[in-house]
Image (cartoon, rainbow, N blue to C red; front, top):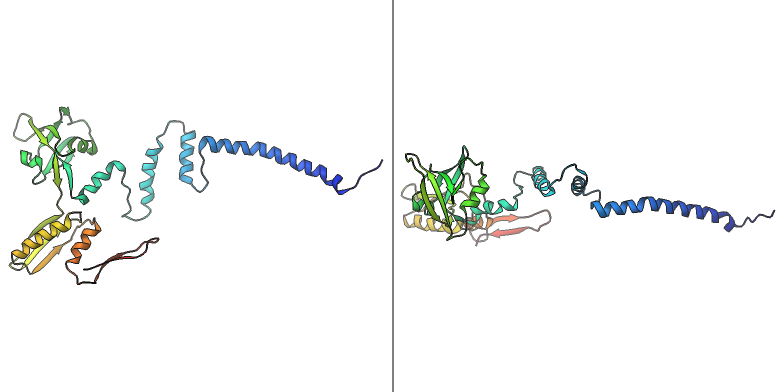
Length: 283
């Protein structure tokens, strides 16, 4: 028998064997990976949060609202940063911005839930509720003929019922101490101002006092108004009280600081890890 010992005759069977094995492996693994990617939306391994959410959505025993899980997860992540990094959901954003915008549209009360009853804590001066005679201590029992007392209604739902566009109306019935019957009110909603200048007066013949509780869009205008009034009353020195000030709109704080500094003095600068330095100087 004659043997052919050429390189081609030696390596050809080996090449064919390797090719077959590779084909088998591709057949086993590649379809499976494509199937998972197509059906479970698996992301890269470094995206752990998305992978966990996909796993829960695909394999958890009960249906789960993944949006709710995300809303719970984000605040937990931000707690690892610093006390000033917070997450505000869309439903709460308008309420969070109210102190900074300087006004909102509603009936002009502050309230609290007392033993599952809406208790009016105060009415905002000049607002529609004060003008109609609502008082601190009144309890709201009905809103638009719907019973709200003893119904475990959330603060957000209460605000949704009482707030609304300027010019619209809301009917309420309140329980007032000393009255046996419910007292009805029909309130026309209006713009409700929020004042950030808490107090202003003359301490003595020459010294004025102004307290600012936060910096809102209208704080600078309010500050300048009372500043002119105190100057007209003879003020030559000023106590500016910023204790317990919660912060707020930086532009308002810069404008007020500008009143006390010489031209060219640095008021504040901002600089971020990926943002260049920006300076605000007195004019």
